[in-house]
Image (cartoon, rainbow over the protein chains, first blue to last red):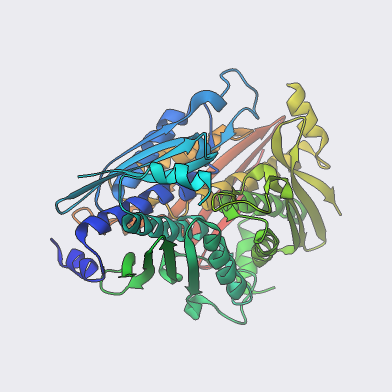
Length: 125
Length: 125
Length: 125
Length: 125
């Protein structure tokens, strides 16, 4: 552990497991609030997914991040206005946080019943 | 509890206390990634702080959110270019999440030693 | 004119009128890409409109900015999930740029025929 | 020209050349306000540059967009906190708008004298 990591650790009033859960929340909200509004079309969607994943993996304690953007909103033979502004409802995200002995998986997914893109903790190991 | 809240609860594989911690992480990252980049000057900073606080309080399970933006970057008698683009380092944020019997306080604050605007859990009740 | 304004002017390869048009484009895209994704409900919408207006007026050469957010998406007696994430389609924006002798009005508005929130120049004086 | 493009054209109270200038302003502000705040490090910076370029090219009337992010802020052998949050000062952007017979080049670049990331029109053909 670097001295900066120790400094950071000392600021936390919770267990390592709880901190991993906290970090998972940070990462999903980063996906949402950094990237919602981004122009995207059928030709750029794959690259945007990859870039969001890599961007999240840059943040501390991320083991991996998987991003899927729903293709249903795209048209393949449109005009110059046929692109989409990324919304939260279009995003499926899954992040795995590894911190000490804890491993937390959290997901964001549009829930039909809630009519809401819910962020939730799906697994703790 | 509404039926939508029950639906949401069922998606979580963790305790209520852990969920409150997760929600705290979401809220601090919302402050950061939604508002960093916003143009602001000495005349608008108070209103921007209030709006960010109220915006976070709109999200689920927030008891209160307090935002302070550092005034050191502002000049009071500048020209048309004398405004600032909000950065994470300028923001002090504190959110209190209340969920069932759990109450979690989390903060974001620039840490001189880390040279980093750290988000951390500061209290769990 | 300050020396910084002169320095900026010298970078432009176009007329003052054309520069005012350029600045108008900048301001409307700032509204869109800075604020889309912001959580908002019926209680905070007025304050958010005001803050976006004031934020745009902080930027260079803005005479005024008017922001209206469509209330149709809001419910007044919802649960904790009954808020909205601001979208471009919900925003009506009008900015007036004044630069030297030129005055340019530009607007952003959802266009039913285009199914697109079009930004356009509506008046040059 | 598609019927949607005609519908859009009819909303504009300016020449095609002026509209190209307006579109250039929109694109540069999109780069700034959509992507400032994005986590990035030395390993992801190239991909982020490409994705921002492609994202801007998705928008109407963009012939090309070139994005360069300053590497000076990155360290190559840091710890988990050694990444950077993208700022406007780090970005060099150049967009070329082609609309009818007009071709407009606009740039965003940090100006040392202004201490400001200036957006400006650099060429009209």
